[in-house]
Length: 320
Image 1 (cartoon, rainbow, N blue to C red):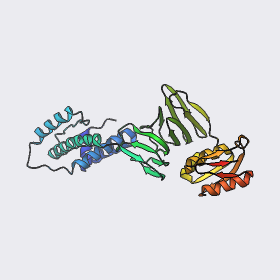
Image 2 (image 1 turned 135 degrees about the horizontal axis):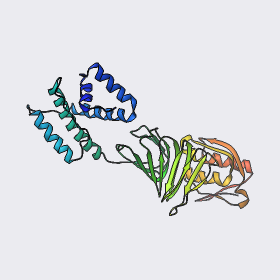
Image 3 (image 1 turned 120 degrees about the vertical axis):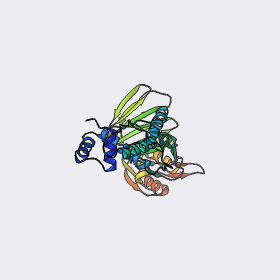
Image 4 (image 1 turned 90 degrees about the horizontal axis):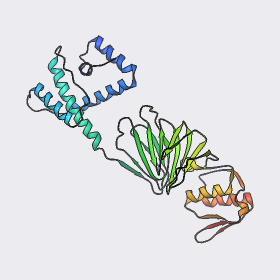
């Protein structure tokens, strides 16, 4: 069903007949694209109402000039059809306001700068304009747009680690650039780490498309993909533990987790330098949950569990 702009103007002005109003409402309900167009129309109209005009200009001449200017800027995407019937002058004024508003709206969208989200020693949660939630681990830098462009949501993870909980929107995919890879989703939750160009993607819900230089793979819950710096190989495997989530859950969950893996995560979480002094200790399985525990307390539990010694020097901790 086609919908003329002058009918939408009448509807917005509250001057549409019952039949016209019913047609508009049916048109809005039958397709999400129609509703999106109406919402854009309404936003432009509401903004345009705040604009002030001095004097009494020739409305038709103003309309022609504004259409020409808007066309030159490629800002005008709404073709106005003026009806000669009921309250024509009101509709002409509304059309003029819509044209001015459309130009302003277009320029305002282009002028909104990107936003740099950065963390140092604290975890941070941020909500994007579309409702998506980002949880940034320490020492993380992400660039997000001040306002998402139509048909695409795009962010860049420069370094660090982020858990993404993406608001569903199949019409507008969410794209994340991290190192050499691109991650594409429409509504899901997953963890992305970019450490010195090595990228790891772990999926918790939904399906994530990961691509790099022509190679692509789909990742589902319980799987992860890693891409090493300066390579095109997508290495997909099963997620073996939940330790990656420590920064947002404040828990270290070990389930038959080898000691070397726990040490790796502890070094990252506490900025420590723990070394396993004997190769025979590396794969000892750990089964425990640490919640809000200090590094000292965790090391003491590990020491008692495996009956090993924790030796501290000036710049490192040795398990032996």
